[in-house]
Length: 295
Ligand code: RIB
Image: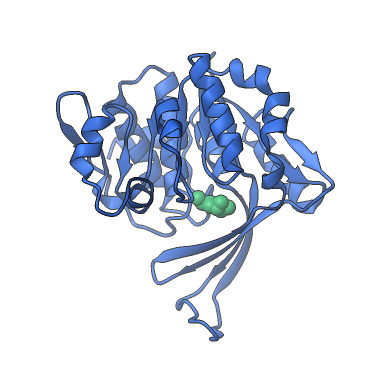
């Protein structure tokens, strides 16, 4: 069976649901509060595993209640956590999330995710090199991401980079990965506000997949720019939609699906995920996805 290794953040999400987003200096009364498993790395690992992939998680948590909570959650989702680091030096990463006015805003406090450094990656080199696909995001130190992408490139291991949260990245990182999946905001930050989408899609055929939310995903298939539409759904919470897309795309890719088919599959999974609260709350299993496909 093929393996996916996700190297990335593991957070606990502290989610406040409110009708109104408070302005600076304002207090509003919210409707609900949830403490749930999150972190872009962990979310993408869960998305792939729910769809049947064999997933190993690499990352670091604190030696605290949130660390235990996060590890239990990964285990429950059948993810190999043997090499997840536990540090005494700092606390498990947290994300403070406000869901209001049909969108979310997130503040991430990386904590132990910053300990997912190059040293830690080197200690886990064997696991990384035994992967059929490595999935990375940008909630761990950028040097770690650069190191792993370079290592994988040298060893012909495909890498899916979800460049989130958005930051400026060196061109070498784009060259080293197999797929890069920015949303529109991340695309502008990486390639510059005035950059021409069509030109860049052409420059990176079958690699640059731009996710545009309800407008679907665009990429260049080697001959032309193609848009794979998103599914229409009742949105409850968009947190983790991108993570579901990436995890599902990874699962489809290692199963040999063509890129357009893998995007279609990942779009469906991401669409299902937003119908429930929480980054991982709505991530579908293969059976759920099959059921949705019939509609
Ligand atoms: O992509 C959603 C995730 O971003 C949340 O789960 C939160 O932890 C932040 O990392």
